[in-house]
Length: 228
Image (cartoon, rainbow, N blue to C red; front, side, top):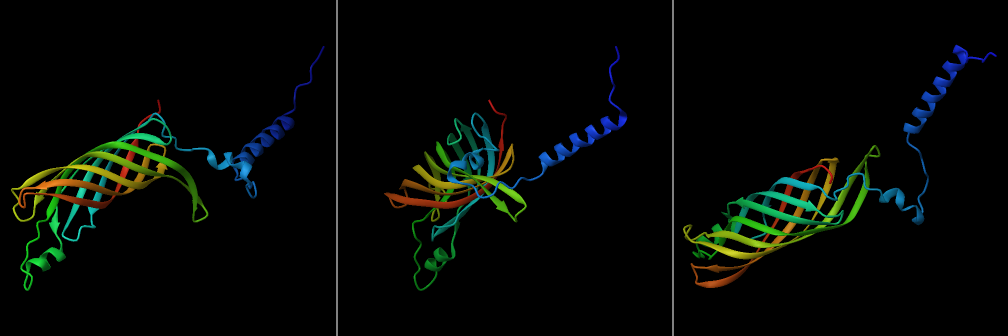
């Protein structure tokens, strides 16, 4: 009893067909206009955060105080419990400088030195909530994945008196912000956040309680650990 073996020509043709099918599978497929029921096509998360630790370094500027402005650097640690919710820690430091507005008040004809305080350091702990994960086309060639998050953190801030630099005060702080992560790859993202730190501080130079806002913008890079 004999069995027919495939000829070399048959084998070659089969190999070419397999290569063609693989190449076809790698090509972009035009699915046409998506309907509402096709939401799973855009709902898939390419860069998941659940169960991962996110560590980042950030540079920022407290730019909205008319009297004192401050560059700052921050370290962030986020533990993601889900795609939307994470425990967030922000620790930062910087130094406040008098603005042109403050210098103008000190000069004639005003000759007034306002009782202003400048930023030194802060430590905040809270949560971030990221209800939005989205994708957008960049130049028609690259798809950018990003999320949008809201933050609420509490802690404390250290500030110094512009009039007397030896006077330092600690202020309980609530920081509220909104930001976005732009994913570069699975373990790397660019993160931007706009945050307003609301403080109530005792100022020894005037022996009074003051309410102050430290509004600023930070831009940084964050690294994601392995999934668990």
